[in-house]
Length: 184
Length: 184
DNA sequence: ACCTGAACACCGTTCAAGT
DNA sequence: ACCTGAACACCGTTCAAGT
Image 1 (cartoon, rainbow over the protein chains, first blue to last red):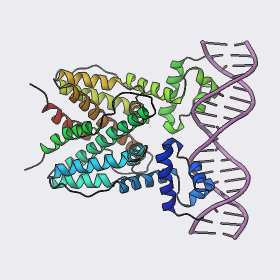
Image 2: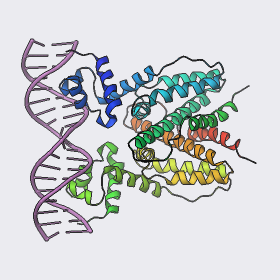
Image 3: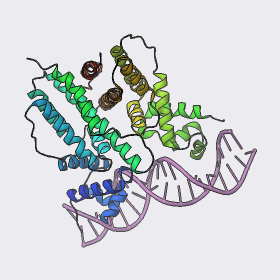
Image 4: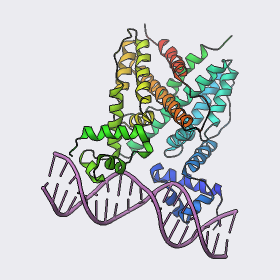
């Protein structure tokens, strides 16, 4: 059977979701597809690029409609969508956050947040600072939440995985600062 | 020559700082010490634990006096110290942030931030939410800053590594939200 | 207590060759 | 264009044995 890049990425996400990031190796993925490891390098230049493609696909699958009208509600909407998208796959937060940190893909959320903040009437440099702060909050919170979730489902830990409520509360703290800096 | 745990951790930090996290392997570290890889397992149960010990040592070395009197200035001081401590070693932010996310060590900053927020008069659950938000901001910002710094020094990229100014600006956004929630 | 030597069960990536 | 087979240069960890 002959595959395309799309097939490789899709199968990689299945392996990720079922066995976790540490089990997602090029050799394992190749075996899953019934290929030699070397065959993967026809579809993807290296593992890093594959992980970036996985991050983008995870975000794409979590996409939903924008409903909010006000800019600050829109920010909450974008951040909630991002969180949900990452939580939908095992180790999703780690994969997406890492891709973002190293500047490979996962750039959609940043673009949308920038747009929302600009629409809110913030100065250019505050748009940048605010966007980064929001992303760091969402990535950090979700990665920690997912790690705790997986640790507790593995029967290891009992401490509460700061859930959706905590998430929105942290977001509101930042939004307070942003709202107070809207030029008028 | 015979080593103790301390020697292993110290040498590991030297390897980290000089060659980076991806080069810090148990085998490499053993070679650096003139040992067989298996000898390391006498001092440390596994690599994960070693990395947690490295994170704690990096934080310890970055320690400095508290000067600020007001709780919010104290928060800025703690966060700045944390950032500086991580920036002092190559890949320091990644090592410390990862240890924190997985609940292994790197717990001092959280303790100090909690204390400062409590001293500021915030309710218990806001202390928790605030502490986490602050940590995510500092970790996220610093990891990104360090990645950009290292990428540009490797001659790869040209985009600005959001520096100390951006860092404090983001912090102030969050502090706005926290200040407005102080009970009185 | 601290270390060696050898092994186990893996990695990512390259490259010549096949269809 | 897509894949095989074989190789290169590595990993983390375990375990019996030595001093």
